[in-house]
Image (cartoon, rainbow over all chains, first blue to last red; front, side, top):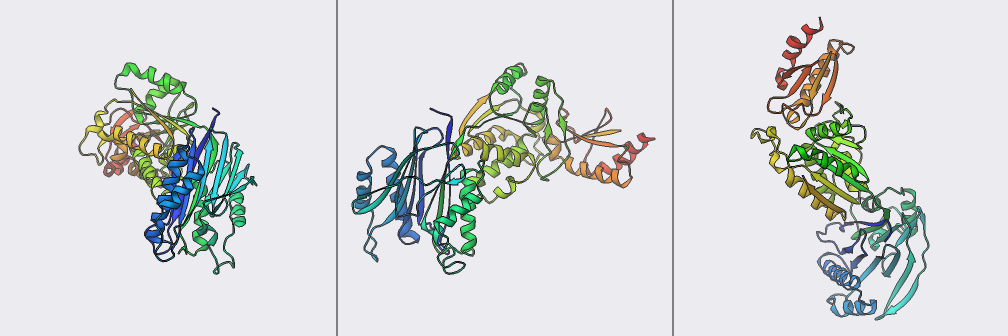
Length: 390
Length: 80
């Protein structure tokens, strides 16, 4: 196994006036395991399309990741999908991206716009062979992956953006590829790249999309561990043991909490230099300790990070805030959501007597619950998360 | 003179930001930027009282609404 890490991110935008999306992305694996990503686009829009794409993506993802041959998967779909009473056909297009052994990419495509692959930021023209299965012409490609490869799969709603309105023929695959290349940075996360393209589609549609539009991105990146310590140990004599383990880890070091910072400062023999810059009025200012990448206040800052994490997994409406702001919570969010592949939490169980005051507006008893919730969110983002208690 | 304000969790919730902003305003208004240095500190270990503030090494416990009288009665006389 090599040091590569497979990250995915997708965003769907519903056709104007529809509450259900007719596109569906289904995932299995990822990270350092084999990945199977299926993007299905059901015929039509609304509830029918939603059922078609949900069935297609779920069946394909489960069967393909289980190692069933493609022929069998496609014929299962053909015989399972309900036939549309208006159009007399059962139909859903699909794109399947698989990454195997962190070495090989396999792309299987049926009638969706061809997946764009960027290699070192440039358009990569990958080989394709065609095969006819159950009367459907399917493209297959197999090639070795490299660090920083970006795969962009999309439903045809992306190509139709702007048709007849801003442009004669809409936004073609070539212009989407140009746009992706122009905005490429090696550090852009999969979700960020998907968001860039979706935002541009939304703009071209004038804010009212004429079709369901989905972009799913697979990114091949290096591993980046982040270690976060919060709270002093329950027993003071464990301070040094906790610090030894924390500073012994490879990767970024984040220290959260006033008392915790004091423990770190004593351990490293370095002073804490506090600032008074309130970049966000709700979040206490950050401090600096030589030898630590980021030092922040504890529970208030982490509550804000949890808010950002829950939003990121949902609509990502707060992402513009944390991806640019300089307060402690935004800095932690960027490091955990965008940069980290592996997150190690070092959680101290000491009880701060001041936090037991019932007059305070938040209950500090929730500290451990806060960390558990944040860890769950990070797992949902596809990261390896480890919690150690002291 | 150095005035240090605690910006740890408890003190933050009890209003250290308002105190910091009020002190910054008062210091600027009186033209005392050369004489008074304002600094932050993470948790002074006296969370039950708080907001914890020290003037040089001497500890005080403030509420945001007391900031102005603290500045006039405890800070200005020490400058002389």
